[in-house]
Image (cartoon, rainbow, N blue to C red; front, side):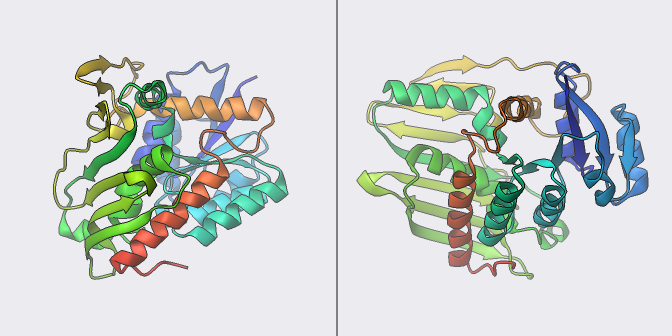
Length: 329
């Protein structure tokens, strides 16, 4: 029986989520409903992806008995409230990264999912991609020796007017969250010392760029940049005592990885419609993880467990505080 999905939000990432799911068998994954606050956008999204039900109310989605799990692809500032509404109605939830705007909200969602005995996962899709799987395998094999340094970046230019509107958290939450998660994946669960921070804030008090150094024990360092004004390499390289591994642009969904100078190219499925973000057809891997967890009766994924989301929320919040960002309650 197919897992029946509801999509909340008609954003670019929701579009790509639906495009990616279109490459999977309909006997396993089926989008039955979409919800948006804008009735027209909801209806147009439904027509584009042949979705039976379209709603202009999140509550209607929460009460839809033909939805097994919802994907929350709204703006960041709505992740918490929408996910909470779904969990309160007993819905399984896959919420786009970053999970929430602060640690308290993440903890509350986890406790609610636990009390309702339903599935909840942060959609950190990077962890499920083939490139990231190869990265982990090569490090575990000792191919590059002991990993001691990560250098990564995510920068994409946008207009000043758009930057000033980034009230959903700024460049750390929207861009550098991938670098933070990668750092903890390789060097955690130890909480690092935030050794260096620099960033410029918008008029509304959110970071429009940031340069961060995280210092772990045994000499392990993660250095990363995020920026709303310039293009950065958008690559990540892990340096070890015997070599290095590079995830090419975009490193969070790379289709090329270089291991000690040897390139590995990764094939991904072709899509019927174009995606709006690079290589985002790889959202299929987290989609498949959700179905596998539901079939096994699990409430959380072993790859992105609740503990990891809380751990990273704490670290991200501490970084933002050091930059001078006021944390939303």
